[in-house]
Image (cartoon, rainbow, N blue to C red):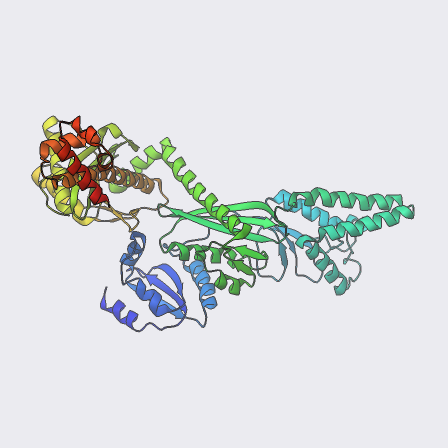
Length: 593
């Protein structure tokens, strides 16, 4: 950390506000909010972080901050700054999917219209509706029931709507503000769940007209009732109440976040919105950042209630938006949030599954990766990972991807022979030396690219053996991980430097798959080796058990558990006497207790 950063960190105020992180080019790469600026900003430069945050911090050379008077102001300012600067590491709201709303305009002579944009114009918005057809049906019904003006521009003479009784004709006569307001309130009440009351009023008018033998008028009322049933039937409730609410859940996997928003209107789940994106900060904070942006432009069309996961901060959002925001801990509402989160998890799994099965894009990703690294197409990729726990039983594993697919018959396992203790660099040197010296002797096929699980040190160790000992010039790249053992950064070159690779690209996903697979293979091998060693070491403590008998016991029983549960007779089959058999059983049962 440079001295300038240290000086600025030392004088940060203990007040709420927003901070803007900058890279060496002066570009704003991240915007965040804080209840206490001093604590939040300093946390980036102290302690350990996962790989995603480390990647962000590694680019920060300067920062600015803006002090505000409350956490609410910080939330609003964060939304404004993200929209203004579009920082690379922030979660960004994608506006590529919008839903239709019914709008009552804020004009002297108001009218109804369908819109996909919710703006701060003091109009009233209702929705969202699942599609334009559903919104259009409801609007047509309201146009027949309430005589607001229909024309976008007021004409100089009356139109057909006036003669049909569906417009008050402000074009030729003054319509009192009180009358317009009454109609607006009735429409608002109807859209907020009051259509049953309207049906009752129309039913009363229908009966009254029939008693007066005004059958044509009675038929009109009957048709209006049928229309309400036909249109509003689609809004049938799925909860006991008819509260408009949004249910929001999220899931994270492999550096990606998926957010699901379930729209419940009039008690019925009418639509959902699914958004997936790579994220870099704390998952709970990035989720709330997304939710804040989601409602930033919808404050004129908010539901009555918003339900969020328990890990969120509902109070801050509720204070800002002025509606009920809950993180329910029980009841059906909690089940709805869990359902949204589960759908988000499934959506991410489906995304990755589809990406892995897409042959054409996988092959293209292999080609693109070679182009990015400037090495030609890496049709054969060999990847290595070391595994040890506190230096015990160090092993290494190698996997092969051919044309972007795992080639399991080519996988290899290595027990580390020449390195003592947890020495990743030494282990990497040994495995690279053994693998490629053998390929040279056997005239085997060399890989187009070697992938090392690790950063600069591991890459340099591998390249040193390849070039200076074996005379091989095979491209080597490294994959740095975060604390959750997920792919965070691609390193390449001499000396190794970070390679810009978009997280939502197929090339990044290909490398993720390679790293996940080699790690899985290495861990499995290490567990197998370690379990055998534990078995051997515990048997070595028993007098009368040498290497030959130890191997015999291991081959026959396979595990300490089965040996503990064995009888003296079971040991006789191996030529072990009763006295020694009893000592083995007793010793192993003492270890268990």
